[in-house]
Image (cartoon, protein in one colour):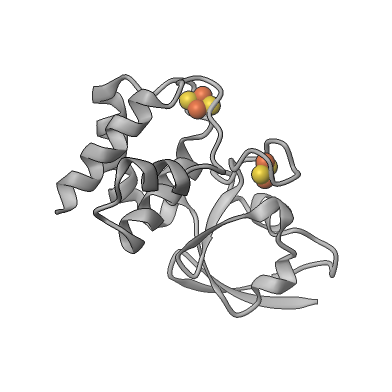
Length: 150
Ligand code: FES
Ligand code: FES
């Protein structure tokens, strides 16, 4: 079956199976910044923005996204670069596997709550796991990134 998605501001038609997940559709069509981790909603590395809200693409049937807007990290490159500079400055940039999903979630937080408190940042990022950093340096980098916007 065919679905229409707006991916990174471009209207596209995808041929999908009824039981196919959005992660699989995106990866086989070369959106490989969308990573596969646990494949069961536990790690967040497959996060994309669906109408500007972070969702785990490993558990969203592609047909459910029909007609909606999807953003991958390629669609927010400028913001991802800004966040990445703060990650570098704070020493939060390690293996990088979680970075695309983290950037998308932080960007969504910026849209929704640019003056987020420490607690709100932690709550918002609860679904994005990182095996390398211990989160403190990431948290500091995110605060600085949000501070840049105000
Ligand atoms: S791969 Fe989707 S949440 Fe882990
Ligand atoms: S930097 Fe390695 S998983 Fe986050």
